[in-house]
Structures are given as structure tokens and as C-alpha cells.
Image 1: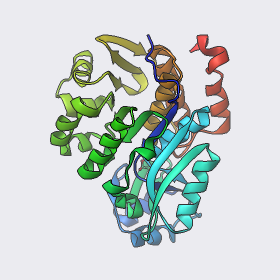
Image 2 (image 1 turned 180 degrees about the vertical axis):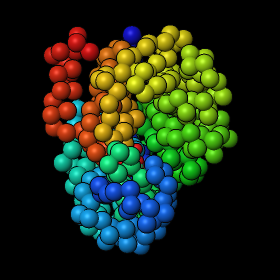
Image 3 (image 1 turned 180 degrees about the horizontal axis):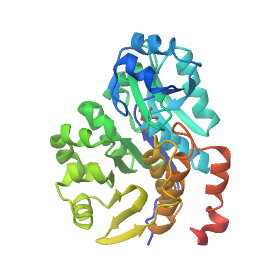
Image 4 (image 1 turned 90 degrees about the vertical axis):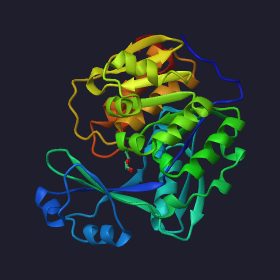
Length: 336
Ligand SMILES: OC[C@H]1O[C@H](O)[C@H](O)[C@@H]1O
């Protein structure tokens, strides 16, 4: 089973926070001196990150990040038409962010702000856990008035990160312009606390705007209140064309027209770092849909991307990983 798109629509346009990830490997003692809970994400000021960076053993590795941006990069690396809509600062990190997108075949559609570019200091401890400190900066200043249909020219799918639910006016502007452009809208629920805190807005928008709803187990439970996975998926898809429930190392389930497609996870379940796993799963899945792959093949491509990103620190797939994933593309699609 496949879905079709108009022939002149091939782009996957991702909308979200333009964040630069600063990856630093440190011992637990580093976090203890900061007093941070391991594994969490804390919103902080820029000076807090600057201070921490001055104390890291080595300068952090700096790469583009942010959930929707990671998805766009995945689509670009797969060879798809990818665009990212967000807001950067007029600074060096903004330049790093933008050039990183271009290098990974993503068309940047970036607004600019006088505020510094948003950044995430991700402290990775020897147990492969990552603890994030996020300064949103310019990324949080994207204005509803800046979002026009032009952002979504040629879009087959507009993919929105759930974090945008924290900014209802901006979310509505994206959904309205995305729908008006004729694209399908995909929403990744991002985190269970996003769902819990945005329940009212979600109830308002899903039926009218969302075509593809993507959730992991925690997000699905927060949204539906249902423990049984098949029933929870049916509820997720009650008002959407496609619903996805990702169950980590147990794979994923895709609901379309009342029928569930079950997709296996890839690999042995071992992960070096799960940062970006959901973002890259979405990249593979959406790329597959736009290219006319079946739900099974699209889900398998999502699984492969999600597996490979977990084999490296940060939300990136190494070149050898992309080569392995690309074995699954057109000429060998019967294998996926
Ligand atoms: O979803 C992973 C992303 O979340 C955080 O926002 C980091 O930027 C990271 O790249």
C-alpha cells in the first residue's frame, strides 16, 4: 500500500527550532559540579552555556541540531529534496548552522534575528547518556507573520516538530500556510510533556490540519491515555490519514485506512547515543512515502535511519552508515 502526491511536489519542508548542538564528552563529575540531573534537558541562558563550555576538557564538536532540522538533514542525506524553515542569529554559530545544512543537501529557509543563534550543550557521559542545556535564542523568535505559503513551495510534506506547540500562534501560522500550499502535514509529538502541556491545542488542530501523526510510546499514552498499543494507535489515527506508533527496539506500527503495518526494528538494540533517533526515523519514513514506497518499505527505511543515528554520538549518521542505508534505496528496494 502506498500514498500518492502530485507530480510537482517532492520536497519535505521541516519547520522548527534552529539549534546548534555542541557535543562535549565529560565525566559524571562535570555534571555533579553543575548540579544537573543526568539525562534531562534544562532551558538556560547563553551565559550559562558559555561558562560550561569554558570548563569542558576539549572544545565541543559543533553541528546543526534541533528535531525538525535533524529530520531535514536525514532527508537531504538520503538524496531527497529537503528544506528547513527556522530562525538563526547574525553570528558565527548561525553561519555554522546554515553551512552545515547546505553541506548536507538541505535548502535553508532561515529568518534572522539580532539575538544569538540557539544552541544546545549536550554533555555525554561515559555511560552514553546525554544531558542537554538549551538556550533557544533566535530560534524562539520566529514570528507568525514571517510564515507564508512561499516557505512551502513544492512541498509534498510539511513536517513540524511538536515543540512548536509551545508557541500556538506560530504553530497555527505554519499549519494554515502549510495546508494552503496543498502539502500534507506531518506532526512529530516530540515529548510526552509537550503532549501533556498542549492537550487543548492538539485537540483543536489534529482533525483539521494533521495528516501524519507520529508518536513514541510515552507520547502516544499521553495523547490517548490507552496502554494497549494497537488500540492506542487506532485512537492516534482517529482523525488523521496516517498514524505511527514507534516502540523503540520493538519496531513501529503504521495505521492507514484502518489497517496496521508492523515494522521490525533493525540491529541488536545496542545504542551509543539515542539522540535524534526519532528525528531520523521520521526522515526515512517520510522520504519513503514521498518516493512512493510501501508503508513497510518506508517504515524499514525509518528503522535503518533510526538505528544508524544511535551508533554515533550526536544526532548524526556517519558516512558508512549512510552507505549502508542507501543499499536499501531504489535499485535494491525489494530488500527493504
Ligand atoms: O531531537 C534531538 C535534538 O533535540 C535537541 O533539541 C538537540 O538539538 C538535538 O539535536
